Picture 1 (tube, one colour):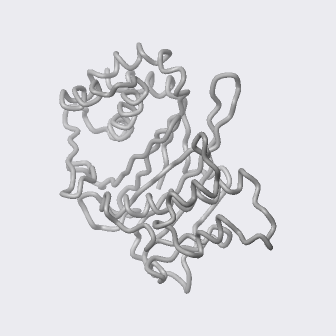
Picture 2 (tube, rainbow, N blue to C red):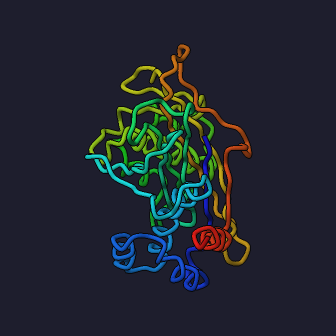
Picture 3 (cartoon, rainbow, N blue to C red):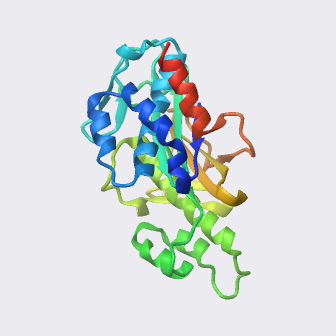
Length: 278
């Protein structure tokens, strides 16, 4: 398993305009039309990066660009339709200044093609403007379990959480729920309150039970933007392996994991253009 992430400054989309225009021709007409419909250029750029990530992966593994094909399941989960040996399962996510892809290859995948049960979600630690943290949590109350609400809003008798820890806990809970449902390929409609993430103990339960056969990994990311400011992100990968678990399912965390590769958007586009033009 690897996670490939691309970072960009959402306030400096103009700096990527030339690379964006040069790169568009390397995706099919349908994708070009879709990307041009976005009102904000940054959304088009993120969308193009999301399309390039699996294409560049395949190109670097020796797959000719003109043979690369993608389809979607009935529920809308994209998958690689080009015959591959070994097969590759992947999933894409984006939020603010990060676009990321998780992928697994061959024996690292549970054999349930075509889309495979692997999912990723990444989110920026931020509180919406003009909102308080308790009010923010209340917005999502029906998608949280009682335990999760208590983790996010401890009783007055408990030590208070720092603002960073409040956001870190909320977004870890949310990205895990997103990554799990994306791995399932179910899209919208899954009741998130069925998924419970006990963040302080890194324990996951689905419908109150151990999710046998599942692995979860969490990671942190930073993105430096204009003025040297740093954005903090958290992400979660969910992957079905079919392997039995002990009495509980723990989310795995390794600081600076070797499976996380991060690149700047300019470097990424230049690499892609060089590879696709060969």
